[in-house]
Every structure is written in C-alpha cells, then in structure tokens.
Amino acid sequence: MSNQREPVPHRIAVLTCGHMGQADNWAIRHGGQTGIRLMENAATAVCDVTLARFPGVRVVHVLCGPGNNGGDGFAAARLLKEVGCDVRVWSLGEPRPESDAALAKAACSARFRPVADFTPEDGDVVIDALFGAGLTRRLPDVAIKALEKAVAARCRIIAVDLPSGVNGDSGINLGGAVGADETVTFFRKKPGHLLLPGRNLCGAITIADIGIPSRFFDIEKPMLFENGPDLWQKTFPRAKEDQHKYSRGHVAVFSGPRYATGAARLSAMAAQRAGAGAVTILGDAAALDIHAAHVTSIMLRETSHDDGLDELLRLKRCGACVLGPGFGNEGRARRLALGVLGEPPVLVLDADGITAFSDAPSELFEAARKPGQSRLILTPHAGEFARLFPDLADNGQLSKLGKALKAAERSSAVVVYKGSDTVIASPDGCAAINVNGTPSLATAGSGDVLAGLVAGFVCQGMPLWEAACAAVWVHGEAGRAAGGHAVAEDLVDVLRPFTRISSWRAA
Ligand SMILES: NC(=O)C1=CN([C@@H]2O[C@H](COP(=O)(O)OP(=O)(O)OC[C@H]3O[C@@H](n4cnc5c(N)ncnc54)[C@H](OP(=O)(O)O)[C@@H]3O)[C@@H](O)[C@H]2O)[C@@H](O)CC1
Ligand SMILES: [K+]
Image (cartoon, rainbow, N blue to C red; front, side, top):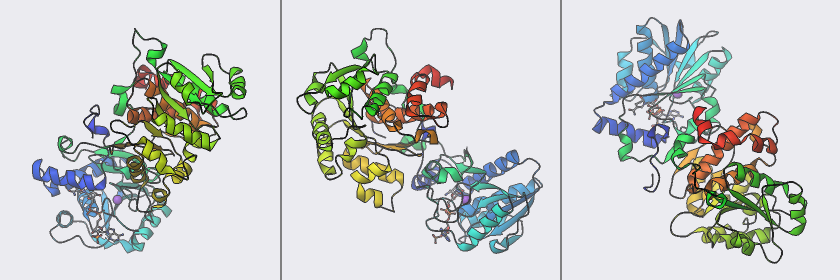
C-alpha cells in the first residue's frame, strides 16, 4: 500500500493465492509455524464449522485431492472420526511423498476409497477438499462427477478454502464447480471469494485463523481489500462547525441537451446527498429551462458560447465535475474532458464521456498522466470498459480485478469497473472489491447516481480512490434500502442515512 494512504485495518485485506502462499511460507520461516501445524489448524477450523453447522451429523464424506487442499481434508477426516462421526474418505490421486498432505494422510486411520466410487446418500454432509488455491485448470472429470453426485443426493457441502473448480484469484469457474453451503478459508479471503461467479458458489464464508501472525502485513503491505467503511472511514468527510457551502465543496455537472437532462440531475442530486455544499448544473439554455422546472437548491449556469470549460472554471471553488451522463455530443465531451484535465477540478468521466474516447483512448490517458495524485476517475460498466481498454477486456488470462488494475495503471485514473462485483482500482496498485451491490442497481440512471456520489465525496476532500470506494459502497447500501424494482430516483431518496458516518456505524 502506498505511503500516502491512511493505514487500513489489515483484517479487511484480501490475499491473492500467490500472496497466501507467501504468508504460509513467512509463517513457517519467521512466525514459528510448521506446514503441518498450519494444515492441522485449517482442518480444525473445517471440523469446527462442520459440527457447528450440522450438529449431530453422522455420516461425513470427505473428498480429498492430491495437494494440500486434500491434506486439509485428510486431517479434518481424522478429527471428525475422533469425535465419533462416521467418516468416509474418497481420494483422488496420491499426495507427493513427504509433503504435508502425505503426512496428514498417513495420520488418518480412515479407509480410503477412490473418488470414482463415491456414493453419497440423501442429506449426507460432504467436505470438498479436492482442490483449492493450487487449481489452475478444469477439474478432472472424476472430480466433476463426484461433485455432481453430491448435488444430486442433496448433500450439504462444506468447501475447504474454495469450492473446487473455482479459481481463487479470479472467481472464475474453471469447470465443474458446484455451489457450497459453507466455505472455510484461511487467514484472509481471496479474490475468488468476492468476484463472480465464485462469490455465489461459496455459500457462507468463514475466515479461520490458522496461526499466521498478522505482523505478516508489516512486511507485505496490503494492496487489495474488500470494500467497506473500514477501508475509507478515516478520510470520510465530517461536517465542521465553521464550514460554509463552498468550503464544504462544490460539484459541477455537465448536462445533456433538452431531451436528455435527467441523467445530469440524478448526478447532481446524488452529489448533494453525498454532502457537497454547492452543486451547479452547466448546460445550454434549452436544457436549463427543463432543469429549472425540476430543481430548487441546485444552481444552474448557462454554457452558451464555448464548450463550457470557461463557465466551469468561473465556478467558485469547484472541486469535482461530472461529465458524461446523458451528455450526447461526443466531440464536445472529448474537448471538455481534455480541457478539464488541464485544470484543478477532478474529472469524473462516465457514460458518453467515456464512449467519446473509444477511437482515441490514449489521448485521454496522456492528458491524465501528470505527476502527483490522479485527477481522473473513470466509471465504466463492462461495455464502456471494452471501448477504452479493448485488449484488456478481451484478455482471457486476466480476472476482472487484473483488468481493472491494468486499466488504472494505463490510464493514470482511478477506475471503477462496475458490475455486481464492482472493482475500484487505483493507479498505485491498490484495489477494492465491492460485494454489497444488488440487482436493484441495474436500472437506468443508477450509474448517474454513482458518478454524482463520487464527485460529491471528492469535492469534500476525500482522496480519489477512497472517494470512489465510499461511493460504490453507499450506492450499494442505497440499492438494498430501495429494494426490488427501485428506479434511480428512489436511490437518491434513500441515500441520506448512508452518507452519514453515525448511521452506517450503527448499521
Ligand atoms: N501451504 C500451506 O501451508 C497451507 C495450505 N493450505 C491448503 O493448501 C491448499 C493449496 O494447496 P496446493 O497448493 O497444494 O493446491 P491444491 O489446490 O491442493 O491443488 C494442487 C494439486 O492439484 C494438482 N492439480 C491442480 N489442478 C489440477 C487438475 N485440474 N487436475 C488434476 N490435478 C490438478 C496439482 O498438480 P500439478 O498442477 O502440480 O500437476 C497439485 O498436485 C489451500 O487451498 C489450502 O486448502 C492449508 O492447509 C493452510 C496451510
Ligand atoms: K476445495
């Protein structure tokens, strides 16, 4: 994590599988641990969750793969047998000789049968310890068949570390993963627990402490997080006694033409709800006539003679502007965006503002590349992302997280790659994965509300990445509060509690 950032509690850190391997190794070399003890601790956690979730369970099937995930399974089988469960172990392949998994298998007195013969009965509990962090390719057919049998028999499934078949770094189903009821993972979550479809296959997630000292994070600063207030609450705007409207922050929103004004209004209202002291909509006279019939506390400023940059710069203490929602005119959007990037206000570029650079994204990235803090926030959904970063969008090797990080680095912008698993990536390599999104956010105008929230937090002095993370989380909470069939106006209506620290602290 970069030095300029406020320290973040490492409990919300997320570790890639590679970093998790480093944490294991570090704990063994410097943290007084042994590999087999870590495995025993992992197995104890799996055993505890099994007994807590299914008290009185009699038959437990343990499906064990050839690696350390299987090793956790063998150790859990032994522990469950010790407490009197009827444990049946089904193995796939043989652990490497002298590996921790081989030690765990040797210590387990259960009878091992090939996974191909797995025959669960209705309602049995199945521990899926076939593959975890080490899976790089499609599951072997025999593993897929075993998992299918578990589903067909309506077994309750507890996944060790990850549901087998889910890639821990991308959340992608490499082929054959089935939904678990519970997933027990170790030390910290992995991206695959948060990104889709992995998140939906995990069921309830338990993070078990397996004895890796958290001072690991003193050496390896966390760069990846699950989004939530803990990540950004230290920089969240707090009202001060001596503030006036402009010192609270001023947001400008560029309006679309006469018949496309609603998007700008949604952004403007959301910026107000985020706490901006003043919000101005900039547009031509015909558009402002429509706005005037709808808004009261939002100011209107006509852009009659040029692209609107001069009018923006004349606004008092404008800290952020939103360009793109309902904007239309791509040529003008492009000129304006490039103009704003040469000036102090931070640019939140969304929708048509992003599409305007489809033919020449590098023009945008060049303009955004300046020493010091980024001045550009991009908020693309998948289609818009592909317009600005076609090669990244098409790259099957990259996860959504990887795409967002590379996009942020390339564009020198904070990139909010939207979706049900929105990723917020910063050019300095930090990223957060958001998990509180709901289907109710998939509605026209929802993105305009998000862009307004981002600008609203930025204008109050929040650092850009933190502001974007806060906006995405608040937007998600609003979606939940608004419920099914909400329209974007409903989101604005329910925003207020989520933009006040006292309310979400109590939540
Ligand atoms: N390190 C520690 O101290 C701790 C680790 N812990 C546990 O370890 C797990 C990670 O273990 P892991 O790295 O051994 O990986 P794992 O998921 O078991 O699979 C690797 C094996 O599968 C094989 N293989 C892969 N794909 C395959 C395929 N499609 N079809 C067939 N084979 C395939 C692969 O073979 P290879 O690719 O090398 O040919 C290799 O043999 C982690 O999830 C957690 O549960 C905990 O105990 C805490 C302490
Ligand atoms: K597993």
